[in-house]
Image (cartoon, rainbow, N blue to C red):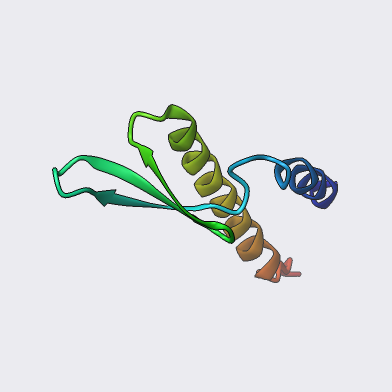
Length: 82
């Protein structure tokens, strides 16, 4: 069931503008903090005040954490002592 939900999420998210973008914290020559977005089509620079980027980064980080937890839980071999 969780795998079905993840597949549906990917189907929807791949059509979003920010899908596949990795964000990096940068500063310009004036010292202003910005986001550098890197994707298959090139580079984009976003202002730090862009709340959509911030929410997206938090969401992706949360999804990665969930995947890591799932991997660890699935890797454990649960045994019940008799």
